[in-house]
Image 1: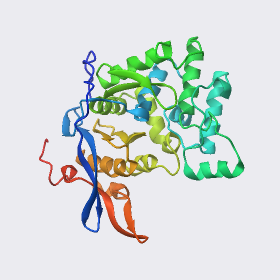
Image 2: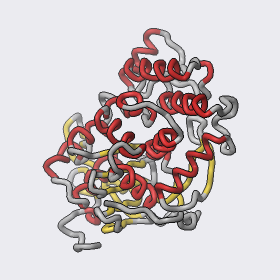
Image 3: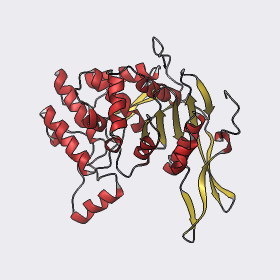
Image 4: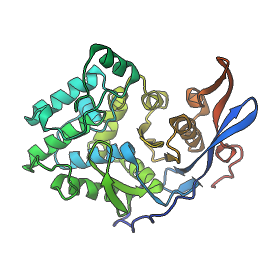
Length: 340
């Protein structure tokens, strides 16, 4: 089981990350393009068994930090479990289940959609978004992919008697509680605070710290806030993302896996024994994020047969496959020295 340090270490350095090639675009047997990034793989004891790129520089985890934010809210008394707790940690697709679940959280909190302070948006899922456009429906705060998290934030504030006004300000008691949990689970001080796309505070940590946090969550004792969040997301993977999302498919494919993606090419995943991986694609490309995460999980010991669907999307020529996005050789298990 992964153990955490007694006190957070110093904040990671803010610098230009020294990323390395992590994925190749191979067309007709030749490398057409290269995606750079960083990858860390943790063993069950918390040791970094594999590093590529710059896993210690400060970076923004984006929505990959949502499981940690959800843990903070449960620690602060949020009583949700199951599908609604999964939604509190979600970057959802805007499907009806997500809208209905968010409405239910708002109802439990005794507030309305008007109290949400995330930005109005269209549903993230392209099929659902196209349907909204055809129907002439406008962007809404409810449809925006972070609305479940924001509804849970309002509920947490109501339960603690904290003001709803300014619940997104870094100095608000809710955000202070979340920041404390980020430092606890990552094992390091926050390097910088800015604003995420939805309007919530965004905390800079290291890729290594993000992987540590995921390992802390999946190895926690049953009934703890960490375990409740992990169980909710694994049991309701489509609620934490969407029915057509790769991260939900990955959790269904690998037994016991907790996974969370984030904008700008971020993904973190952890197994119940504490093995964990974290990935950052420098140019933010999802087409590289998926196969690189799969390759990292193979390095962590996951059976490659479980991950064939995540090997990389094909490149087309004349409508026919002529290549694919492939992990770089540095991520090939056959070429990585034991204990690297």
